[in-house]
Image (cartoon, rainbow, N blue to C red; front, side, top):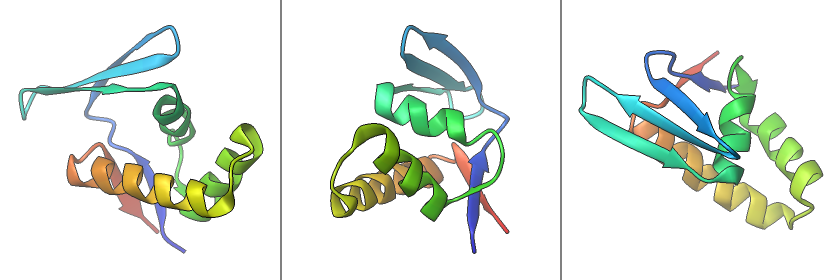
Length: 88
């Protein structure tokens, strides 16, 4: 089962319940809302996408299909922007 983990090359700063990151190589910064920050905090160690989904369902009490679609979209964007990496 594939797992995901943070790209530790990004600098990050937490402000209240949001996270701001900077990618010095790409000269870009990213701002994560509270829900994305929750997911980001879970990515300190490799975790399966299925486990991430279950944690979101437990914390936010949303429909499983909604959680899956939202998580897939977030992870796709994070992978595209090299904020996270896939691992085994």
